[in-house]
Amino acid sequence: MWFYKNGKCIVSTPVVTGNQGYYSTPKGFYNIWQRSSPATLTGPTWNVNVNYWMAFTYSGCGIHDSTWRSSSEYGGTTYKGNGSHGCVNTPYSKVKKIYQNAKMGTPVIVY
Image (tube, rainbow, N blue to C red):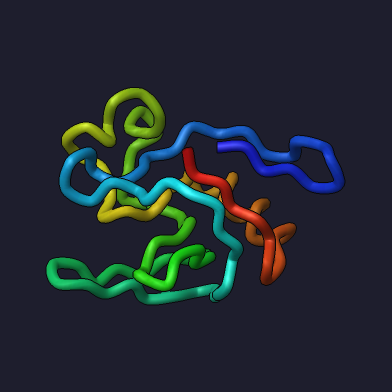
């Protein structure tokens, strides 16, 4: 994932996206419409606390920290069998910087 501010890349990081075939992260152009720090994310099989939450779909997909993941899980093929439920799992230090710089309405492009 890359985060740009004023035309400059200020964060570049591997992430874990939605579990391929089951909970794929939806491709498209979005905007951050909700921000919260901290937040509790709940769903049919999960209830997890995160430090930084930035929703970009109205169906529950967002960018957030995932402290339960080891650093070796980010990037690569983790999303092919151990991905998220559609969210963008991001290392803590990177999502913190994004949260500090992203505002309501910040564009999010998923491809």
